[in-house]
Amino acid sequence: MKKIDILKKLRSSKLRPTKQRVEIAKFLFEREKTFHFTVESLNKLLIKKSTSKIALATIYNTVHAFKTAGHLSEVEVRGNKTYFDTNVSNHHHFYDSENSELIDIDANDIVIQKIPKAPNGKKIKNVEVFINLKN
Amino acid sequence: MKKIDILKKLRSSKLRPTKQRVEIAKFLFEREKTFHFTVESLNKLLIKKSTSKIALATIYNTVHAFKTAGHLSEVEVRGNKTYFDTNVSNHHHFYDSENSELIDIDANDIVIQKIPKAPNGKKIKNVEVFINLKN
DNA sequence: ATCTAGTTTATAATTGTTCTAAAGTGAAAA
DNA sequence: TTTTCACTTTAGAACAATTATAAACTAGAT
Image (cartoon, rainbow over the protein chains, first blue to last red):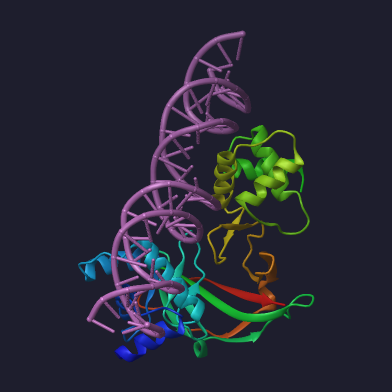
């Protein structure tokens, strides 16, 4: 992903490309594989990577703006922390509770044959499959 | 469910049948349908039901003991609160984010045709399907 | 009835997240 | 350019969910 795309992501998230935001965006989106993180883990990684510490509040704000703009998705994980995913396409997850690790599963790798209809006046927004792992 | 079963649930959870625990257990398990709750909602309902307030810490302790003993299951829901379910059989959920309501789906009502194999040395513990609803 | 380990309770501590308000900054206008 | 101002960053406060603490209490064995 090139720098111009980073700026596009920021602009489409209604975020001015400040130093901090560009740094966060590059860290999140300039990678080959999808990236799963919590705000806490992202903060630690950013501290390790660059010398200048970015305020936690800035990370929360930026991550939420990306999420609202559809550049990040939130993953359902048991527990109190919120997990995010740079893969925003429709897909599923393995969850390895041993080391709290999420692994993407391509939407095509799970086929659901039978599904119940939505209750009274509701519609199905999306279906998420979560495969818990053990050793 | 009879009182004897309540005592059994407490005993199998390694909990002495104190007044508070019996009250919580009866509230949770003496019902026809499965019950979904957070500790906060359970606390409010218990306050409404009985005159004597049970300390939050006691509710947390008791709920966790039941969960550890397998009498309650924890449900994955986005967000910061922890949801519990009196249905401990293998099953799935609808989630209506409009009113934060969980609805059980019987395991037989969802059939998965194709599923990926677990990664490197891991095994599949269980599969949870989550169907998000909209209006 | 007495004793003791287990329990309840109010409150403090901790953790994850959001809010606030003051100081700082990008970029449009002059 | 320089000025200007709405948008940003930041540290710290506030908040919410959960867990820990320690003193008072209690179930159940003796």
